Image (cartoon, rainbow, N blue to C red; front, top):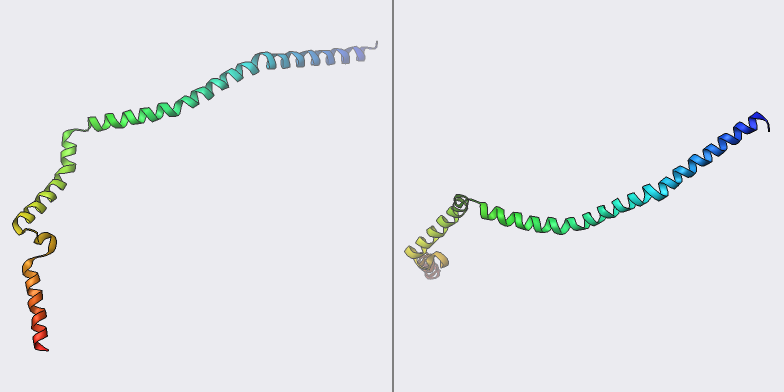
Length: 119
């Protein structure tokens, strides 16, 4: 066998052996390990949404509980003032705050009757 043929055979056998070892390592070691890790990631991702939802609900509840009373007072103080003002107007003026002043009604009726007389 000539020298060039021996070298070519040696190169081809070495390439085939290295390729076989690499493919064997890939299919029997790396691929199962990656499949296991990917499955763990998928399982973890599926568990995240329920945990996030419950975490957000707990966080909102705790945040509302932790808001100081002074913040609630500031938020409700203005509406309380408006309610008290409305209540005092209702007490002082009666239902005319809802229906309009009775004096305004009388003036409008007198103006209408005066216009009818003038015609």
